[in-house]
Figure (cartoon, rainbow, N blue to C red):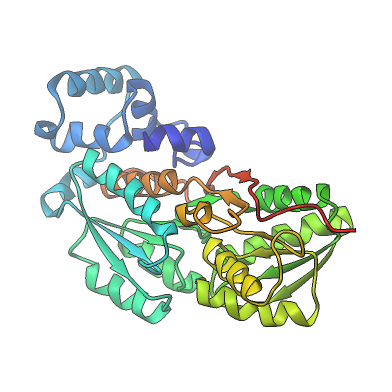
Length: 347
């Protein structure tokens, strides 16, 4: 499944320059299995069904693939553990990421270790340092560490980064630019000509990409855009942002995520401002709580489960000796879900 997702949204994690040499991904694609299954067929044949292993070996022989001898030599030191590092376990956006990563781990015979950083780069680095040597691979989700720190870790540990692009490190991303363009088009279709963006955490790479995409889209459509924040990616963070919005009101607000949007809707309601009659509000992530608030939240559905599953599967493949196409992130598409929190401009 993760290999299929990767192929659909950007291809296997193999560099263009390596295509002259048959790789584990070529064998996996031809055999119709995950790259981690190909690796196990050579390094741990007892953990792969006999007919599957036989098919993989036949395909490998036909393609002229030779297993990496160094990767085979490392198999005796493997732990069968994968660390998934999360910024905030209370944020419902990560539930689907965890579920997807768990699916990949279960399929590949791995145990998943969860670690929470509480949005702290220092705690994140300390947890990664403690995990090294105890796990075979690490997946960082919405990392708050610097690019340099992440690259340093990737030099010594199989590593995949989710929702963050770091040059030289394998990553799986939500494709933010088209998502923000669709939000802007939706609001423009409703007659909105002024938008406020409520920014998320200052260290968030995703926040920077959402702001960039929104800025490009509004410039193209001639819509005035202002920014407030940063705020915490929580309901409380959204509530605090309403004060800044109230200083220079716009007819529409785009929030960093659903939790911030819900906080905005709640504070507006408490202040007697109606959504969407007086102001339209848009979230991001399509978390389940977005449908439970009144009015139901217009949002962007991100493929969170595929994000987690693809990232974990590729991290496991890297631990098994696969080569990384680190310069070409896998980008997953999104879709806009229009609900009751957006409506036409009054008057």
